[in-house]
Image 1 (cartoon, one colour):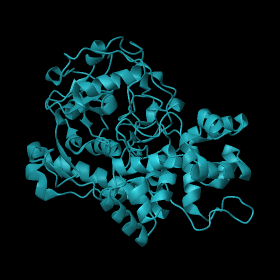
Image 2 (cartoon, one colour):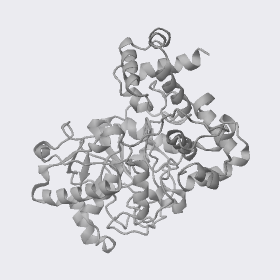
Image 3 (cartoon, one colour):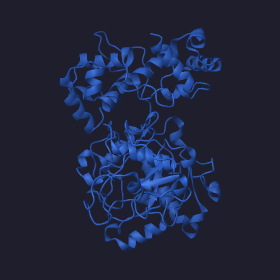
Image 4 (cartoon, one colour):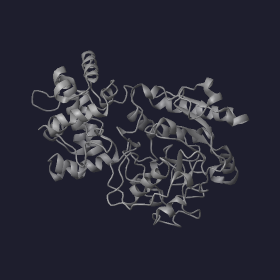
Length: 485
């Protein structure tokens, strides 16, 4: 969170962790090491107004002049409270991605290795934290603000933030008894607070609070007189849950507050959102209270039934051959796919649909996700035959553009047609086929068979959570399905 409302944003940086650098990116010499990480006293380009300096720094060296890296070198910060992991190499990758930004898919949550960067399964009910004793006589103030902010999120999303007070005496990054510590920032840190995203490694998950900056902002800026520490923590815990800044959306119309196109909206654009900077023409203020749309978005991404994108039914088509709307799992996947991936390349080149469907679908999905098939018909303009075509693509013959396996050898989790094919193989292939023909480690095969005897393996996460079913097992199934054809 930025420290001073007078420091209007003039450019924002891309948040696309885990993606490869752009083709043709400039190579930089190896002498840039983590020994000399930058520590700028501001993370904005110019202090004088909305458009004093526009555009992107011409060189990586210029970019580094507006980066603040914390003293331990784990996290660097831009855009007020946007964290970047990976030291100098992480900063270089971040810079290169912004030099030639690819067309992104809309997201309201950060993009992770498994698609939406959220907490899945039981993780979302164990977002445990401690409050460092290093806050001294102001520890109770930070505790009250954090507990209040956590309770606020728990009321609108199906998540839990347990407070582990028995860990306060050792509340630091090396403590694996908590999901994340809340501890003081370096005194010169140019932010009010900063957090992390779910995809961050364990050693990078912490929330830092700069009480000196908080006090100074209250005293120096009349615009921030109503600011509360609870509101600041409410915003930061939103990042912990994976939520992005709302002012990056194109509907905001503020080029000086734009970050990137890699966002997926959970609701219509919301200028009152807790995740919207007030100084970016927000209709909120520095109390950073929840809006009505915040509650809707939180329930969309963290529903009571859990975050389950995939799944199948015994009966998925009705007597006329159309998608059976009582099969909630398949309907959810169709609406999720259309909400995330219905761009022209996929629709026309990969799904072989008529170009006339592109515009209404893209307009609808950029507004908000589809609720159900009626919503797909009404806003997206698809008829039942076209919806059946989407079903066939996802479950019968679909492939994905660009790549289906990432640079580390993992099958891309958001390539749902391929993931569905792998799940079908895991649920139906015999022990011998998985062992001898697919080539999965025998212990992995045993775990797959034992799991599916209890219930079908319906999600990517459910599959990779099994022992000995990780990168190599997924890639072996991928090769068996596609390279053997």
